[in-house]
Length: 495
Image 1 (cartoon, helix red, strand yellow):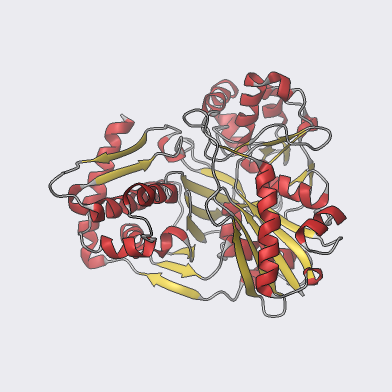
Image 2 (cartoon, rainbow, N blue to C red):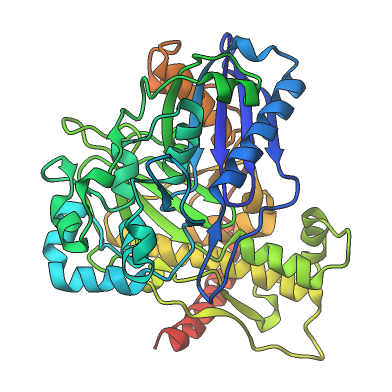
């Protein structure tokens, strides 16, 4: 018996298979090999075609089954993790009406800001735990105001994971966790936020049927099964946004547990046992995967849009062809902490929540033509993202979260010793790098949802540590001075 998990990202689609008997990964695959493109017709816009996610999911499934060497009929449950806050629109024929406006698109900020002002901050924060901001509801409002003829054709709205579930099952459904990330969930009435729907001018009919985060969400149709190489009737048992799912994958399920990731965007995610919000909306609170009315679990999410995408940009623009991230890490060691005064502000991927939804762009500062080499730029790029993490962690601490240890996945930015040691030192907390991925976590969650595992804790147990990065306490002052200099430069742009 095996379980399959998907991670529907904005860079690629990952698929993983775990062996139910050992709860260990059997195979992992990613498709396409080259990162997916984003459509950006205007500054601050970011769109992708949902049909591409599905096509790549089919290909990733074929590859992972081949790597695992198993018959698709042996897969007994499917879990889905997905990029958060995106908007997918379909008509009554379940045809996609336009490209998805994805998580890092900032065009809807004015609509969210206006909603906060006119509804009132107290009501928004008390009921939604957030300002409407740049989330899915505000993106739908942008479509309503700017593409009214298309909006009139909308039958249902979906998040990216809901769309993949629709392709798998033929049904349009969503979850409470998903609705909360889109600003559609009222944490006081424990139902769809009718006051926001009414203000925005949305009919409640556009909200899909709500299904449990863990449990029967539908079964694989014959058509989908044929495309995937799986058996018809295979249950879909789990669905969650990538950051709540990442926290689950790393074992962050209960109050005080913290997880982080460093992909295209960077995230620190802490779990609280009661509703909590930031009245400045610099970090955001959502229903965690195991949230219930009786036993609240709120995930407090710090997000930095300009994270891995900035470092990828640096490699593409400055590194010679064929130079890997591992080689760049070696080159970085040629220069000291602080990159000899070169500083990079990494916020070049749209509006940043930790900056009150300002879109200040990326900046290279204090460049010295006769001193700074490629190694300086590589280090300054990683340090800029690490400093952004610390800037956000300081906000989390303001809200009462204790950060004594970070658990992270063994991929992307946290594979860099330079990046990880900088974060660990400035946060004064060790970083445990765990051998898991979001797709593996989704597969394990499907195992729990279908009854194979007795508890979530049992489902996510068993991962080993790939590495641990300890704070460099003897050099803390050096790191702190470099960070404070960077923060002073950031203040100039914010003011």
